[in-house]
View 1 (cartoon, rainbow, N blue to C red):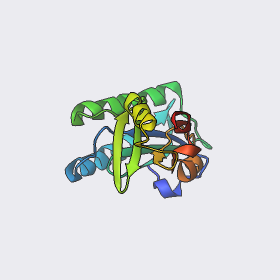
View 2: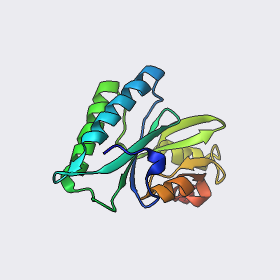
View 3: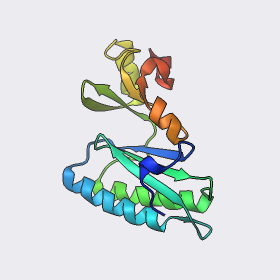
Length: 160
C-alpha cells in the first residue's frame, strides 16, 4: 500500500539508491508514476506492504517500508531490486552500485567512484567538512538525521 513518505514512522526500513546522474523533469514524472504503481502492488507472501518513497536532489531514490505490520521477505526485496534494475535499463543509469560516493559541492551534488573520492581526499579536494550522503542508514529516523552529514561523521571519515 502506498503511504506518503512523511507519514511513515521513523522506524521504517529504508533503501537508498543513488543515480550516477540527475534525472530530468520528464524522467522524474515517469519515475513517480512507476514508483506509485510498484509500491501499490508490493507484497510479502501475499500481504500488503505499507511503503512509500521520495526522490531527493533529482538523483536519490529513497524507498521506505513500515515493518511494524509486515516485514520485507526475500521475495519482496528481490522484487524491489528487479524493479530498480528495470529502471537502470530504461533510463541508462546506475542505481545499485554501492562503490560510488555522492557529496555536495555547494548546491551541486557530485558523484565519484570510491577510488576517485579517496584520491580527492588525499589531495585535500574534499575534507572532513565536505557534506556526504551516508547510504548506510538503516531506517527513516537515521536517514532524516544522519544521511546528509559532514564526512567526519560518516564512514567516509576513514579517507580524510
